[in-house]
Length: 98
Image (spheres, rainbow, N blue to C red):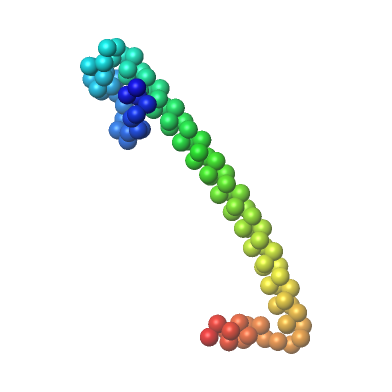
């Protein structure tokens, strides 16, 4: 049907606009309703996919934050060990960056 072949539009839908679009259909009201339901279903599916993507990104971000905290802990541990051995960690860092 026509409704299944049309991609969601960025234009706001109006009743008059839909009825005008489907005025040549045998039953313009049913054709407009079919289109509207199909578009709603498409948008609902896209919305669900986007929420799944958001949750996946949120989970990945959480894992990265845990890894960052672990690495910072290691960094601080090694920094303390170097300082305990009398090393100037700030000077070491500057010389390493140059």
